[in-house]
Image 1 (cartoon, rainbow, N blue to C red):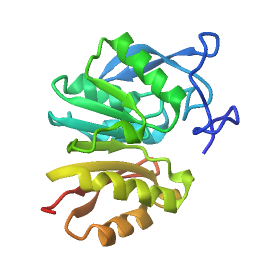
Image 2 (image 1 turned 60 degrees about the vertical axis):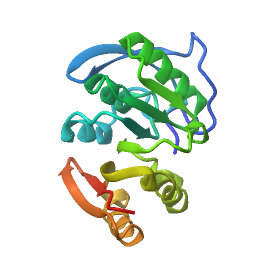
Image 3 (image 1 turned 90 degrees about the vertical axis):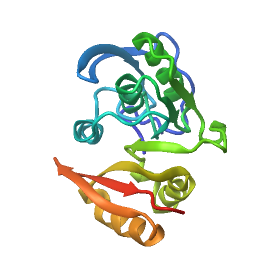
Length: 205
């Protein structure tokens, strides 16, 4: 997956001051000026899938929360704003994206966001909820590995919400999740503007 600059999302390093730019975006109902840069996912706007996800969901519960594939941070920042008592893990493989999340959390005065690489989330962390606009274009193999790594970390009864474009395999991912995690409840929580929001609610594992 690459942005409109041609930079791949997994190759960028932290942006210099000259590369960063301001983007006005609504976070938890309030318009704010945040920082983005080329070389991350959707640097010029809040992408439509993320918009659908954020419009669908209510405030997450307290506890450890995960934004998987956080980009410059709109999902993680929304979770952290709506539930200030939670710890929000903003996870990405892109160092530039993680740097932007940290900067944006500081702009918003949020101290409950932890922006880090996937391997830096402590193994004993169990998740109260996952929100994700996953990087579908990495391919099914990598995407399935991501699901295998993170969905089992949900506490029983907790849910993951994944927004996926319908024509990029939302329904096939729904079927795979139901087959892969038969102890969980896998449903379509919402559908809007060509996107599906999939819900995976953890059973007793």
